[in-house]
Image 1: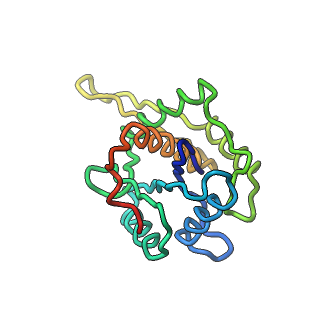
Image 2: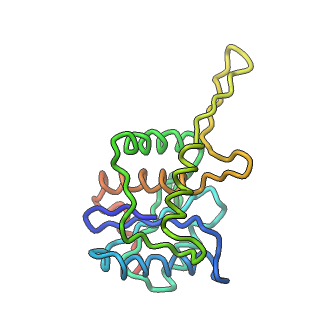
Length: 194
């Protein structure tokens, strides 16, 4: 998934490994494919958004992309000094509000040259899946058990067989894009892969 503005490309992969390829290889292939297939993005900087609360995945992503020598890559650092984005309920609230505002203003679109790295899926399949996940994603409030406690608020769309990985992908991309747009003063310079 990508958001593009001023030759900035943000990518987040949520698909499981396909065709026997590990997820990191899929990520590298996806970045290369987007740069080759989408006009104007050949030399775009790719900002990779990895959830930091998934063990050391963000570090693995950074190390793999460095080893592959893919140019113009930035692994975003947005978790109090750690590589990646923390997707706790507080962050999900912020991301959900920002994404909801863009959806409300009809400012989210699918690129006509959408690149899909899962050979079993089409761009239309992913659009339909994201639309379904957006419809089931919600804010859930569990009332406080005592008057001196706060209610617990959760954001998710995991009900029965439903998943919310594409919604989280979209929300992370919106949040990442907003941070990039508001802070292009070199904060991420140190993470570029040479």
